[in-house]
Length: 275
Image (cartoon, rainbow, N blue to C red):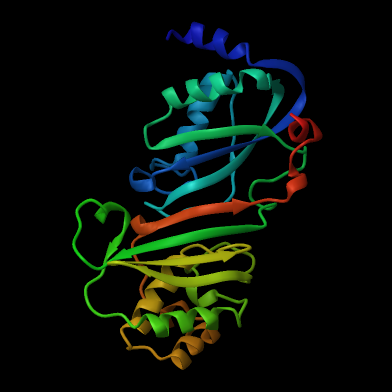
């Protein structure tokens, strides 16, 4: 479709009013990206989305995401917000989403767009985020891209008990990327568990916030526990040391998925709730 035609097409979705804030809900396969956040000399999910939205809406779009993801990490559910001096005609939303997904790369999909309160923030208003890390123990070329192949015996009982240890703490400096600009390393963990199914094991963790590299470092350290090379007391000591060098290795990002992000129910505008 010609650029002039695109501009005319998308102009039918909007009408001029005061500044309005929108959330978008999306998913992405992070294999080809250096994480969510835009950065110099690297392709990111944010930059791809901003480029496409800016072209389609005829104005520069700057997105704020619900959080950073590491290189190669995926998201089954992700939210971001942006502001416009326009408001969508929501009766045409289905057509808008369909057209957007035609222009986005195949590894990014836009599920929804909705109006929110003017001060709503995709990052800071999130109540919780849930991640899952996938591990398989038999070679399987059909899941290798999205799961970590791990040979050898793991003591899942000890790994499950290590999950319980996490609830006793809020400072997770030991599992944070070094030299991070984060103001605080305090997180409230709501859920942490290992589940086994056939040749696969899955780690699920939910918290109000996560530090950079945190989930990958926790999983890597728990694998050392599972190999019985780190006791539960030692695991507790790693956390209390607040020293990243005492924790285990960071597992690869390709097996990590952001699964769910929760927000307060009143984050949507009255119009959006009633529509």
